[in-house]
Length: 119
Image (tube, rainbow, N blue to C red; front, side, top):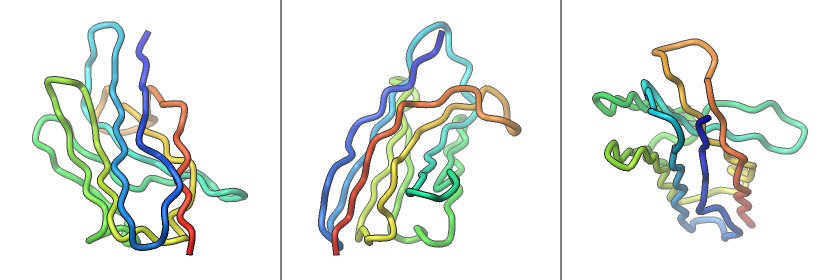
């Protein structure tokens, strides 16, 4: 069984920063990609940023480009999301996910961490 444990959410003001962390543990891991998703109340869950594990190639949605940075620590099976210049519209539950293959459904999900940005 693989577990993903997230941390780092919280309540901040617009313009502040937060850093989310997600560590994968369990059986021998096969990690091809990891990513961060978010779900705001009444909205669908959507991908915010993903990273390819072998070379760190990253993807961002347009609304977070230049403000969010995804990174990874391969030795610790940990992915980070540095979120700067946060905006109220970034408020959501943030989930990390792990994919054992290069595409298709994500195989494992974290429990989610709340990020709330006040105006």
